[in-house]
Image 1 (cartoon, chains in turn brown, purple):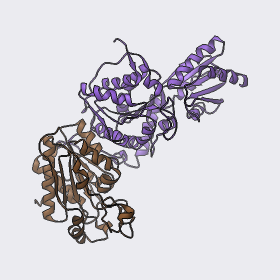
Image 2: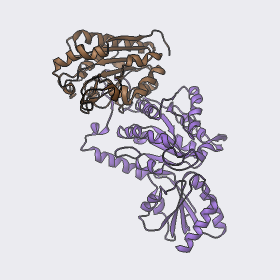
Image 3: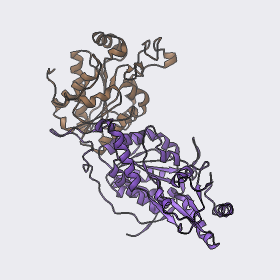
Length: 247
Length: 351
């Protein structure tokens, strides 16, 4: 890991994330991955509304703010119009797995040649910490005050199980709660971008990310929550890794 | 160029390709589906992208991506699907992204039915989604105009960095007429400096988002009002039919105007001074056409294929409510020429 600010990080604008939020780290990781691959001048991002959208201030890439839940399919539109661009969609878990689940799945079924980086903090962050598709069983949120009850709220979405029936190129789950995990996240993003360059198709990298504000935890305790709880429910790893050009 | 016999929907689709449209994403819905079907084989021939999407939402939002990237992008739908596209159209407007949307109208709220109708006027002309916006709305009345409007829509959209809607109906979309199609052209996706492409070292960052973040929230209202005022000043389009001496003026667009034209010919044979204003743009509404009318006009007859008379208010606004506006609407059926004439005769007795 390099302790220098990557050139694709924009320091002239303010991205107003809370202390201890994972979003800033994820932007840093994307910028490092792009630098190491030498592809800074090939990237376009499509950002979701809400917390993730601040990345448009943090990163220097040309970008689009898509509609909530639609960023992955908007990214597919960009890629089809500009096949030489490396297109990254950046939804949160609420966007990708709840209101936008149809396009998350269908981009896999069509094997759209894009990278979908899903920031999973197990809550709807910007709106005040409501239950999201990945809120854990028993997790207390603004809309599950007694804890998530599967009988009432259904079970959490584990994307690694949902996507296994598709021909998508790559699916991994990472986390940004420790230096080692951050490094692994970067390797997964680099691998996915390389696959996009190879024309292999749809890559989804889910990143478990801290939300101290809505979890009611200190930044340090939020990192531990990922280690001890969130990543137990959602194990880290690579779940799909197909090689060879499909498109 | 030689004319060819072609369906309205296909004339529209082909003309869009010839305008340089190389991206389509959409979902099957009657009576729009032949546009999707046509493009599913024809787009490949011209080297473009055609995607049958998982939903109407995906259709409009994929267009949002392709259009933001600078492509001439199209999605098409009908009634219920048009409702689903509204959020995306709102985003296109908020982000100043040009794209073309077609609504091949049918009848009724909810499912309504697939029959010919003009059920979406309110939604088309008021901005059917959330926030302050409207779009230019073109209303073709023939297969030739399906081609002409499809071709023109992309230029208009780019002129104003704004989506343009082509609003036809089941009749115009499904019938066949001889059409002179425009020349094939190619569009340069790097033509505009706002189009999203990978940023090169040293280049200014390009971002598509709420335009008021670029312009400033204090300046944005003036910017937006000026943009709409410019469209209203420049883009009103209409056809006036024998309005010079008309005592009763029909106001009708699309297929209804075709029937009204026949009624005018018959009425004139009987000595009835009947004319028509046919709005070609539903927004901006052609107020100028009403300003040109002489003092002999006694009343207006709005004719549409819907139940509640969705355009009546616009006729009243265009005339500052100075003259009576009556409504003849059909639901399920096409407008009846005989009913127009008896309605006009009845009006002449009263006004």
